[in-house]
Length: 396
Image (cartoon, rainbow, N blue to C red; front, side, top):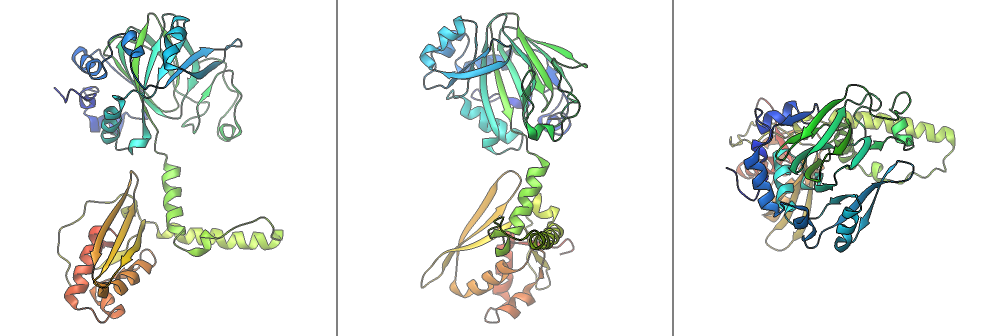
């Protein structure tokens, strides 16, 4: 049995391991798991929630009430926690977003799915018997665990707007960004290809990002939702390109719309060419960093100035300097802080100023900073490799 303070995510997706689920199911296709009584009891005990009265008793929570307006559109709004029971008694679905016990669940899910903690949201839906939601899709991956009662989900693939960047509900207007890639007319109801999933306590369901879904509750029910803010390929690569460009002062400059059209077109053409050069400097080995090696640095060991990495001097005194090397990655940013002797600063600054991808070795460091010894130059490169400011070439 897992730690009783966690969701036990590693056991919810059998026969898949957590890694297999992440590689072959998450964000790609639906998954429904059968009721798992022991696991759901663990979750209920961790939350201290076995009934709606337990939810109402939670201190310091944030609550939204969900309802359909007179035109049938799905709406929601914040309500006072002390008044939540009245809205629930009136037949409204309640969404809880800030229960203290969620913190451990968020950390567990972020680690399990290799996400930054801020990319995971934990929510509790409390639905009344007869409650329902209109057909809609979300721009996130959702994993729901049924805690109490029975809830029916109807889900279908999304051919109207595959891999959407925004959610949308039937009867709403379609936003200009969504129109940019949505095809045909927006449907008025859930489209063809529907599968139905009836969740009992302990059931788990994964709804991939963008899939249509609508729900109905045959009885009062409580379900836990993990909302995973899906990492997007376009955002990751654009962020990497921006990181590379911003090393050059030109790209940090202002761009007001006062230039002559012809001059502006010429400048933009040069900028587009410059962006192409920056793209050529991007290297997958800097974007998806491999584990660091423990091999020693020899005089002939070859390196390149790594991309997605910055260097800064924090403070200098008579005996040395405090420096920080920051490596930017897919999941998170890592900063390595260390103290070095003053005689290493010129070499450090020389390496940091090199364009991404520039080759270097011990001889190059000594040529740039001839006051260093060969041993000091090798030790410096070894330190910078651990901090990821330089990357060893494949054959070194």
